[in-house]
Image (cartoon, rainbow, N blue to C red; front, side, top):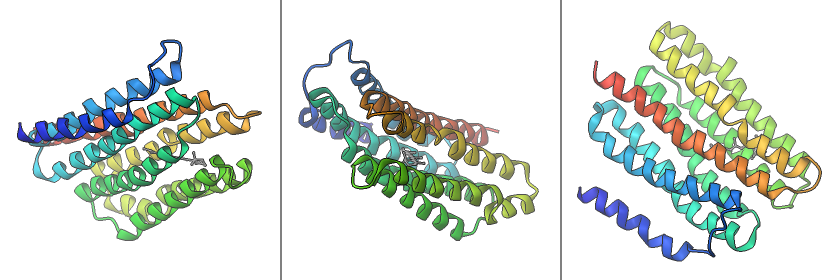
Amino acid sequence: MKKLMLLLGAVSVPTFAASGGDLNASDYVGVSFWLVTAALLAATAFFFLERSNVSGKWKTSLTVSGLVTGIALWHYLYMRGVWVETGTSPTVFRYIDWLLTVPLLIVEFYLILRAVTNVAASLFWKLFLGSIVMLVFGYLGEAGIMAAWPAFIIGCLAWFYMIYELWAGEGASAKNASGNAAVMSAYNTMMWIIIIGWAVYPLGYFFGYLGGGANEGTLNLIYNLADFINKILFGIVIWGAAVSDSHD
Ligand SMILES: *C/C=C(C)/C=C/C=C(C)/C=C/C1=C(C)CCCC1(C)C
């Protein structure tokens, strides 16, 4: 209970700082910022409270899920303010959020694999470095420091490299060598999240910058949906695996 009070206290502070203008009902992008903010708040409380409901080896995974949604909640409070007040993309807040939460998600993947199998730390570092290159070039393209197309292509190559490592690299050999059904299914879930779940982001970039002129509404709507899938739904999938593994 004390933990929950602290959590609620911590999230109520920035809402004052971040209260931008009013929310217009026809501003569907602003409404999507609002909805994802509320969902992130609920998800953060949920993941921390559910720690007591799972066995020891899963607790850290739920903590990391809660950190991811908690960090994103903090940024969404401000991102919504930027959008509602200026009608432009909160690019800097967005990328600071990604730079913090994407490495945490990779830690999360690593923890899940570690819970069921022995994976080399080098897989973690390869995914980590790939994700940093992907995000740095995404930012250079979105901030107009680099032309939109080349930045996008280099970002995609870094993402393809991560997929290649998971699909055919040392992680894949470790998985196949294990011959264990639980290992295979945890590994494959993570691989498909990075392939399908993460593909929503480059789609957002594509429709935002490369479909003829900048379209900031579409960009932010797609990014907000992507965050909902990859931060909240992904956390819920882990929670589901953790609960079923803890109660049988
Ligand atoms: C919680 C935030 C997450 C999981 C963010 C993930 C972001 C990406 C997978 C971004 C990918 C991009 C490319 C593959 C190409 C360049 C543009 C990016 C940065 C949007």
